[in-house]
Length: 200
Ligand code: GAR
Image (tube, rainbow, N blue to C red; front, side, top):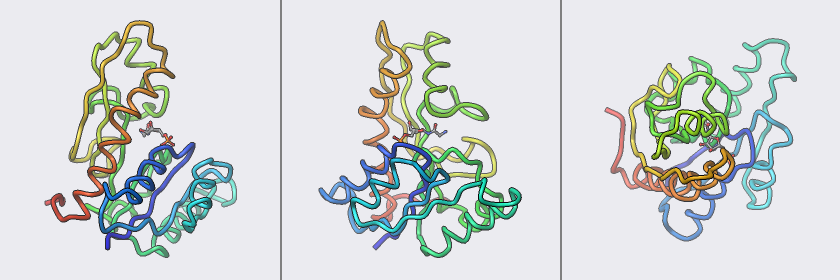
């Protein structure tokens, strides 16, 4: 059984896709052991509660400095003893110590085709605003292993999505989620659970 900890900051639709995929068998041999959020009011925490999943909020302003916040975050993850850490819309730069400790065991979903529209400052709706501003006709989503850089780790899966005339950032975000994110993230987790993917 693959034990996963899911880290979130917002609505948690990717978390929901993981929960649903475990329930309907698209993800096998996997258990979400904990959901951790850096926002106390993240709707994702509600989703965890509704599904009987342990959760914890680790909020920066509750700590004196960044170091104490980072320690608490690492402790929250360690306590769950996960085999895999899934960043599902987690908008905090991970502590280096955590990246080293969990190397090859942290994956992230990013809402573009990396290396386009990624790196510092590219998160959430901003990614789609940038794609529309550049006028690309195809965008998509990427799942990758996390390393020390921002969105620089080895790519595991990508799926392309068409940009359509009249798209707003919100409409495009929803299409990328429906046609790419909610499919490839559960797919990668299942592949890891089945031993098909590992970082070499
Ligand atoms: C998703 O689109 C995810 O790809 C993005 O945040 C959104 C979270 O939505 N992540 C990033 O931009 C990371 N750089 P959700 O909370 O509904 O899953």
